[in-house]
Image (cartoon, rainbow, N blue to C red; front, top):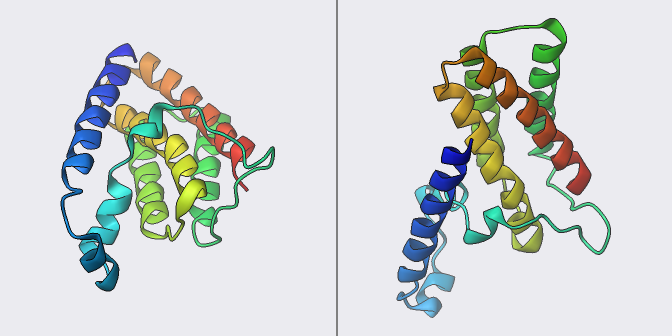
Length: 161
């Protein structure tokens, strides 16, 4: 887990540097052109440097999430809850199912601004947990990752509606 956090920090640092180096384009030109579909997807595939910061509430309230995204979070929550409840041990299958839900979640995102930034603070570590579940072969460690995924969904519900 510590290795994953270190790798997360390093990748976020590179992403931050990369994003800042791309700010040499003409802002007026960017505003007039609609983003290409690849650029829109890329916007959600990488995460800002705030992803390791603590999630903030919206003036004491949970952040609104666009309705198109909610079914994928709900489905992911149900997958993890049912996995735990049934005592399932097919961690690779769970990882695949969660990855599918996360891909749909990302594709459906139309959020912008502070709520979007706060969502990414939750999403990036969550994606890392799914990746860890996908790659880990030790059942005991995977069981722990599933517990962290359950906690992740609980955190989502604490900060988002």
